[in-house]
Image (cartoon, one colour):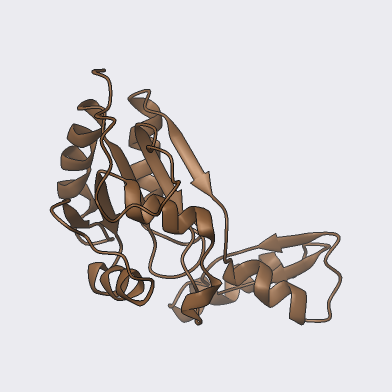
Length: 181
């Protein structure tokens, strides 16, 4: 892999360091734009390429925080175009770029299309970085008043009645607090 360009975009916050090459996953606010972390803002400002489940939401989030896309590529990556976009993202990683992936809301890869993107990056040997932050799963758990020392996240239940019934019956055997989306 060629070395990353050490130059930084003009909108990078004062004192922020150059971003290392690789795929950077950031958690985005679930409801309040101010719930973003400072590290996520540094990555939004400094990564060479921006990839988002919804580019309109990411642009708005950046605008709220005084950041601009500038001349950087901004790519949509979601369930419907992942197979077409993965090679393009892998190409940027091969060039030694720092690539940011932002889910629509909350922590990437928790019921999110970025899962296949990270699997591809790992398979190709690219560095993977995570900037923790907002998580709908943990936010719900903290206010539920249910035991949180042992819990299981089960994502989305199937939409078909028979499959949903089976899913819930199996879930009912788990001895822990259950969290569903």
